[in-house]
Structures are given as C-alpha cells and as structure tokens.
Length: 512
Image 1: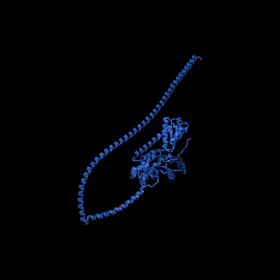
Image 2: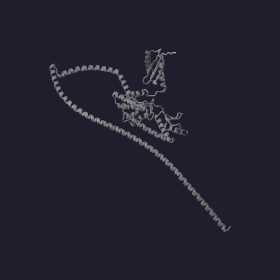
Image 3: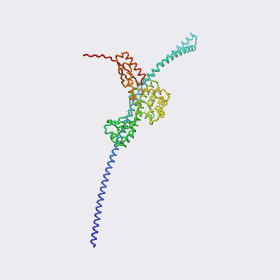
Image 4: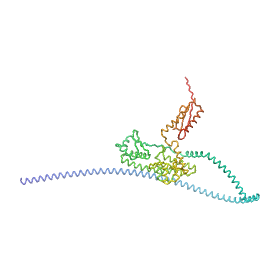
C-alpha cells in the first residue's frame, strides 16, 4: 500500500468522524430544545394550578371576611339600638325626676304652711285641754294620773277580750279560705303566662332537591356517608323516601350539626372525606357560638343578670334538648315566668324565683353523663358556679331528692308541675293515648241504653249517644254526671274531659 492510499484512508476516516460528530451535535441540540419546551409547558401547567388554588383560597377568605364583617355590623347595630333605647329611657326618667322634684317642692311649701297652722291650733287645744283637766280633777276629786291608770286598765281588758274573739274568727276564716286562696293564686299564675307548644323527637328530616344528591352523599363504596357518620356521631338513613334523608340520633345537638353540615356540603357541591371533616368542625364551632348567644339572649329576655358563663352556655344547650317531647328551653322559660308571677303574688323575691325557675333543669344538659339524678346534678353545678343557697336548694328539691328549706323551693316545684301537666305540653306515647281513648268509649258503652260513644278532641271530650226509648231527658242528665264522676275517679288524664250525652227523638213516616 503506497502513501497516497494511506492518506486517502486517513482523510476518509477524519471526514466520517466529523460527520458523525456533527450529527451527534445536531441531535443533542434538538433534544435540549425539546427538554426546554417540555419544562416550559410543565411550568405553565403548575403556574395555572397555583393561580387557581390562590383564587379559590382568596374567594374563601373573602367569603369568611364578608361573613365576619356582616356579623360585626349586626352586633354593632344591635349595640347601637340598645344604647339608643337606654338613652331614651334615661331621658324619660330624667324628665320624670325633674317633674317629681318640682311637685315635691310645691308639696313641701304647702306642708310647711299647713304645719304652721297646725302648731297654732295645737297650742290653742293644749290650753283648752289643760283647763278641762283642771276642772275635771276638781269635780271628781282624782288626780289626772289616777284617772289615766283606771281608764287604761279598763281599755286593756276590753281590748284583750275583743282581740281573742277576733283571733278566733280570723283563724277559722283562714282555715276555710286557705285552700281557696292557694288555688286562686295558682290559677291566676297559669292565666297570666302563655308559651308556645313545641314537640321534638329523635330524628330529623333533611330535604334535598333530587334523588341524585343521595348518590353523592353516599359516595364511592359508601366512603362519604361513613365519614359523615364518624364525624358527627349521627346515623344517616338513605332509603326510598323521595327527596329526603333521615338523620337519627338521641342527641339533638349532634343532629343539628349533621343537618347544617349536610346543607353546606350539598350547597357547595364538594363532598369528600377531607371536606366533610373540615365542614363538620366549622359547624360545631358555629353551633357552640349560637348556643352561647341563645343563653345570653334568654337571660336578657328574662332580666337575669350576673349568671356564670358556663351556666349561660348550659341554658343555651336547653334549646336542643327535649323532655317527654317538651322543649327544655321553652319549659324552663315558662317555669321562670310562672315562678316570678307566683312569687309576686306571695310577696317573695321575684328575681330569685325567676332565676331558680330558669336553672331548675340544668342537670339535664351536662357535658358528660353522670349517674346522679338531674335535680341533684343541677344543684351541684349551681353550687360550683357560685349561685345563692336558696337557688341551689330550689334546684335540688324540685323533685323531693332533698329537703326544702326556703319558700322559693315549693314555688319552683309547683311551677314545674304546672308547666309539665299543661294540656299539649308533653307528647304522650301513641299506645297509651289510643288506649285512653278506647277506655273512655268503653266506660260509656258499659251503661244500658247507650248506643254509641265517641272520644274526640284528643280525648278531651266524650260524646255519648243514647236510645230515646230507654233514656229520658232526666236520665240523660244523671248519666252525664255519673260518667264524669267515674272518669274522674277511675282514669288518669291531663286537663279535663267534657261529657256530652245526646238524646235524639225521630219520628219517621212515608207517604206512598
């Protein structure tokens, strides 16, 4: 192989290597450009996502800020209204005080003038009396002291005799009128207080716009509904009931938290476990604030001041608690008003009676579930938070768990019984209600001549139809009285039962 061939081979190798190097550089440059382009696209995507998240967070913060501002404006408006009302009241009182001061000044001047005239007359009377005493002493031969002693002894004996007669008459009259006056006070108290009737139960109905929402609430493989039940402690029943979901729980506060949380989740549209926990937590805090506000508003409405914040919160919790179907807050407000009226009738401390009436059932709404009766538990809570001994005794004794040692205690017990026994206040069990109606009808049908009987007006009226051939008008009156007496002695019922005996005489003929 000559030198030229070698040179040609070397040149070929160099040219081939250069071409390969050039091609590799081109490929690397294209790959670099592709990587830069992909990085830019990914950066744009991340940037858009962050912007969307920032916008969503901004909107949420904006909504919370607007809600906070509205709440502040409402509170400021309420405070301003109260301040204006107080200012108006103070102005009126100031005017009234000024007017009374002027009247007192005028009265004082008149009294001074009259007093001067009375003093002049008294001096003249003293002179006349001294003259008469001297004349009488001369005629009777007795000194004024001896005459006074003899007259006082005679008057004392006469007054003692009349007092004994009067005391005997008053005692006998008091025995006759005591029960009558007690009933009168109770009846007047009931007539002067009226509250709305409220019945609650252990389930709440959550209405939805369409049955499609049920699937979103249940979630994939039931994860959403399990998350809601775990967060709220409420059993959620999703059945074939159209456009409705049942929330079941014995704790009304938990049911209300579940209802409000579901409403917010359905309105928002985002239903997943993390969102559920967030919404339930916010709802719990909001409801606690509402409970505290309800307790404060109740105390303000009733004119009760200086109540411990924890007792105020317990008063607010009564709104979501029922006893035998009667709302506990409405019952406590009613008992407080009844106690105030009855204490005023008896000349006792109205504020203490009203305070004891409001707090008498706080043992039903503790944070934990102790085994003590609610009256004793309420007494211990009242003692713990600094209530007066009279109020603590009234709370603990309103079901006779302890001995009563103040006059307020029997008032609270009586007013609690009045509120609970008021017709329509408490829900009866359906079975016992139906049985009472049947017993009423069966009692009337047991008499001869009764053709049919109907218990109407929820058992407050019994209408008895009799056969005119067997029962006369006179016997109808006797039958009505007899049935009413048997009902009164043999049956237990709220309020009163009206017995109406109907006797109808029909004469029917046909013209053919």
